[in-house]
Length: 261
Length: 78
Figure 1: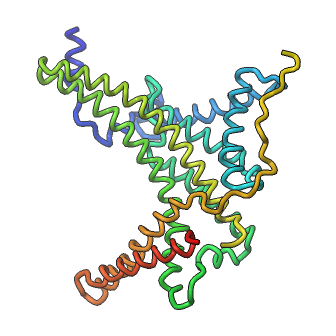
Figure 2: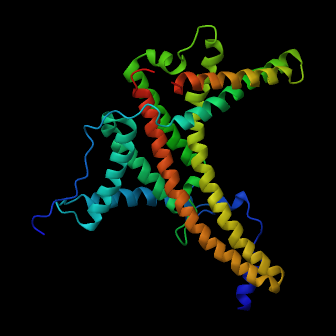
Figure 3: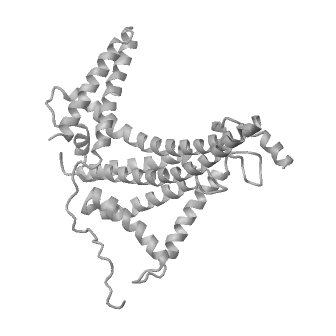
């Protein structure tokens, strides 16, 4: 008990951004950020998804097994409720990309609440930025493929009298080509960052209170109970953010493929 | 159990095209904020250039906000 208390006594509070940079876990070389828990979790996410879907679909059955049912449900959900609902008939060919995106973001986010890992790689903005850039390049590419060079006119020139156009075109450019990837990346990053920070504050805050005064112990316990409740809240945020990212990507694809205004 | 039919989940391959206003809410927000940011930002540059203290930025933000509303009406309105 005493040993534990000594360890708890140097619990730092409040949590800082430094807490998002776990130390190197590579057994070789000097300390660097090249191989940390974050790196490991990204590789684990990729491996889990590839292996899970390969195994579930290896021997597909007409009456699916439980594994196959789950994999088919996930894919079917993204295909029918996101791809086809948002994009229409053409959306079927984007279902594989959208489903991969959804699963990858969901698993990456989920690390934030899995015991012993408890940090999401998506709480580092680099990962959401790359995901957003992929979607950004995709919808611009599709727009140019569908409309040719006319895509610029299609995306930038709204139906309006010519004398207002100089005011409107910069807004269209800003809103379509700058705000879209930026908001995709920041929305995902900020939710994951805030979720992790919130859990840290309540956990470490409990230790900080119980260390400063034993009479505060009931409040510490309340704080830890809140941590558990917030973990469930975080699960809702995790699923929602994976869904929102996918839906918005589908919506941008739909915008690029649309016939006219 | 032998005659049991699988759940009839439609494959939706022949679904009608979706409504054009999917994602309209995000679009409206990005027009409103984008309008004020773009023209407010241009106004800020003008302020720096001619040495005024924010009047151009204010005018720009108002014009940008108005243009954003106009864009929402044209793109999303009837």
